[in-house]
Image (cartoon, rainbow, N blue to C red; front, side):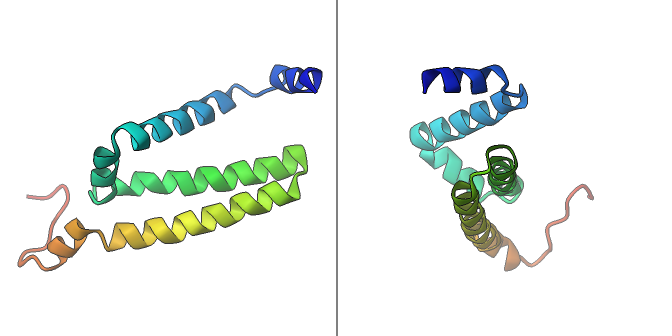
Length: 113
């Protein structure tokens, strides 16, 4: 089993390093700085970045299917991606900051003065 894992490690694409690091950093930030992560989630200039987690989960599921042929894992990742998309979309569009802006007298413009 260790020899098989070592063989897979040898053939690993360098792009997986970015996936692992991004996952690790996101997880560490959620654990150690939960308030900052939640603040980003309701900040409409930063919250769309969370949707990259949905894309990454879908891509990972596709790669698990194509490279590893693991249908069950790929299906589970697809379900996770769908749930993440629903939760994040709801959270992004109903965030308190967005609700406050929606009731503003003057619309918020980006890049124009």
